[in-house]
Length: 525
Image 1 (cartoon, rainbow, N blue to C red):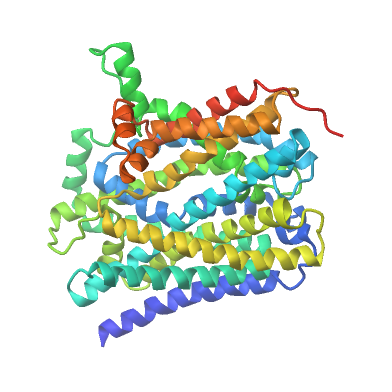
Image 2: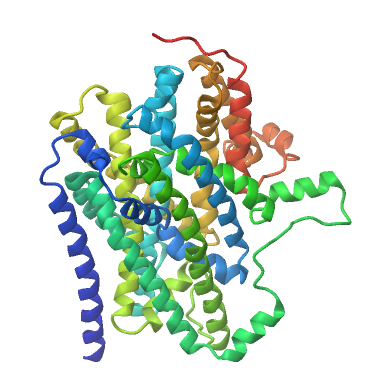
């Protein structure tokens, strides 16, 4: 009876969250009769709400579950140093990218590329965004289902079989996507941003609550012992004084977490994710002017430092907790440890809040992605001129279309993780952007930093070459060749080093920019 009572309380907390989110979507969807209002909120959203929305978009379920997984596995704060580049990148986006977007009054940021280069570049960049965002959103979405897979294990006392685990993922993915698509299609960007405010509060509140519970169950001696070992370092130089320059360069470029990857690689990554991604920039364009938008963007970068610290601390404390409280049933996948702790050890009510937090982070990032995908497709491909009620109707229709595509990718991602249980979430999610966003960033930088270089033909060549170079140095080309049995290609690519995921966008951007700059801009009417 006591177990049933606890379950009811947790379910009520989760239900309250879903009701609040759907209510907000319905409220804001009643008067949306223009694309500017539906897609950009009439450019009337206060800067602090835009700030909360950016934070919610970045802190997906991959962060909520994956970042504690990084802390649990590595038992240090080396992942946190990547935030330094995220802050630098945001400052550059705030002062280089935003004003031209506002000056051109764009709905889709790829409209800017048509003004600068031509319609071909606009469509190419928009297509890259559509494909990449569908893949990345699907990869993130499956993470929320982890808590249900772990719950199955706890209730039944045995690990679910691969087929059972797949069914659990499938049901969870479809349920979350349907609810998110409904309130996003009804309420537009206003519903996205105001529900993000709810989701940010739930996420941060639940995470802090988890830390307090963990600290209460871990002895001070264990914490002191970890502190004295010096394992909680944040900065990793990645250079060996006894090695040569070339060996150190190769070592740095192949590492995910070093200070160089943080200051250089992640700066370029952030330029791409926050300056060329319609999903993220569309939120910023809802602020009244570019100055207010700058404030939101820069402060969101500063907020990443404490947020990353909180989630890594959860992972490190989980490591200490399960060293002191050995549990034979503890999942072997690091991605599932935090979900297991939530379901087994969190007190009544707070457990429901944390589960709601996992769903909140998934829905927050997914809602904006669906709105951005539908807006970009409508403006860049389907109906470029319409901006009234017809355009709103079209964006709503395509919201459901892209929701279905995201479900397909999320289910495929779940299948991949089931088949490869040692996979880490963060490199998977960030790695997807690395393959394509470097090419797109190179074109945007060329357009913003020059006035006479680049045209549609040159940009096509530059983006293609940039993608190929990243595919080679990320191992994608070698893996594909091996999969289809091209042994000669595999042998040729074997000596090529695999660069760390923070470097891939920089590599793609510089190669694309160099190639495209060889072509002169054609004057447009």
